[in-house]
Image 1: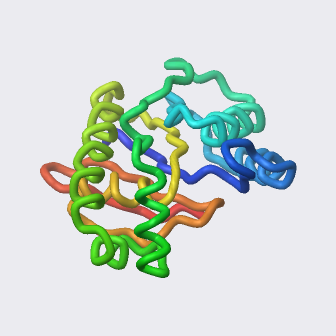
Image 2: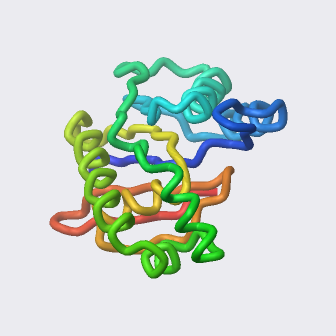
Length: 173
């Protein structure tokens, strides 16, 4: 059985803090998750960590590896991502790549390496639940798999798992 990363986006926020609606949404999502996670991972941003904590509370499931921060999943250039978004008029990775190709290329490498580190922490058959941000979640998937995924809404995500030399990507609702 393959290792898996469930990569989700944080819920509604105001700055770096979840809104009341964001916390309620994270609890609702958490109660619908499949559970059985070996590891919980946040980017270290408060909004991602709060979302992950709400997921964990709603799961009420022991997590053998606990919760960790993987700072490589958080871009140090959030302002530049916002500028690229404004220039592109969209959160689609292809549009962002047209607006600022160097940003997407360099940030994707760093973000993809962080996903690889998470996979290395897992044993076969284990799953990590990771909460990050858009469009950096999508950029991380691009670097790891060479595939472009649609922008993730604040309540969705993708599951990424190695399949031989390739990767399988499944959308999560």
